Amino acid sequence: IGPPREDVRMDGRFGAFGRLTEDESVSTLVESIKDYQEMPPAKRKYLGSSNEKEPILWIGIANKFFSSMMYLVPKEAGRLQAPEYRARFYMAPIREVSKTRSILTGMELTGLELSADANKPMLIRFDLFAGSKDRDLLKNDPLYGKLDYASMITFSSCCSFCAWDWLSLAMMWLLDAFASIAFGNYGVAIFMLVILVRLAMHPLTKKGQVAMMRMQKLQPELKKLREKYKDDKETLNREMMALYKQHGAGPLLGCLPMLIQMPIWIALWTGINAAVALRHAAFLPVWITDLAAPDALVSWTTPVSIPVLSWLVGTITSFNLLPLLLCVAMVLQQKFTPQAAAADDQAKSQRRMMMWMMPIMMLMFFYQAPSGLTLYIMASTFFGVAEQYVIRRHIRMQEETQAMMETRVQMPGKAARSSRPKKPKGPFWVKRG
Image (cartoon, rainbow, N blue to C red; front, side, top):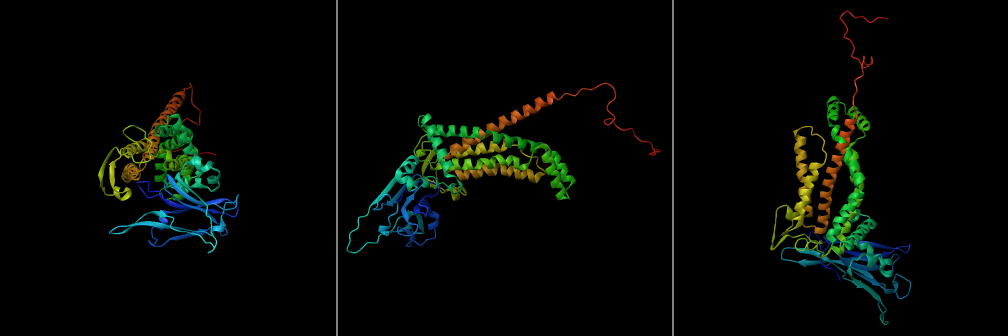
């Protein structure tokens, strides 16, 4: 009943089973394929039974878009558990044996042992679901809603362990809503989602940009403090904090908006990566014809192995343009982000290295990623570059306007005594009194 592998980057299939807890709620437990990497080929793993204190209700296998679940239907109406079957559930890896090694390719439901009386027939009733992980179907169906099948929707994403399901499902709902407005084009819906999220996060982004520009202007004074208190770290830290407080700046203020946005980014990643509606959904007629797969501008049949890149994403069978455009967007973002002045040549060298290291890492991570996910991150990055430019231009215009309004007027007569320079004292001056 196991679905095939969908993701070209990794085998994201997993086994799952629902257990009825003491408070009569269903808890979904997951068996990742990584848990079976070291298991011997002939061995299977015991998961539980249908007649224990917290019985197992159903068992299934899923990939990122499809799932198969089997539920033992009890004889007594109104109950979820079926202890009368005395069923024992198992899970085991599927291995393909080659000439050189045994390759783990998936998992299967290898055994469902049922205990019955020898001279008494038993009628077994079960419900088998095999289909796409459609949010509306799994949440709105009376039985599947009680069995918590919907919890399997977002698990297949690599970021699902740190994502909030409700937020990921909300992002998927927004994507479907925008697609209905865009006549079913999910590529256009992704751009609309980018604009919505960026506009919602604009106040935080602006605060981060203001904080970074203030830090950039404070670099000369910070350099003087480092030179003055280079042998006294405690005093240096105290003076730096006082300077930050005086100018309303600080190194953490620029990072705080980014940290606040992280849950939304992770939810977007999880939701787009698990959206079954993107499977075989085209954005353009010739290019990006499947948003759930790499864009594959040019494809070939013979796999090509590229050093380092193939080690991360496997052999290459297509030229993917979107990850390269994402690298361009990352370089522009690094270039337009306010940077503190480098203290020495070594710091300048490290900054140049970081400027190119991040885009190269993104290229490796996203070269075989689904084109819908890469399209979202690329569009969001380009939008962020334009947003940075507009924010910084607006801040500079405000500073210029404020500087023009601050005019100095020279009043006639002598200046205040406190502001006048003191006369030099002669060599025979003596303080009296």
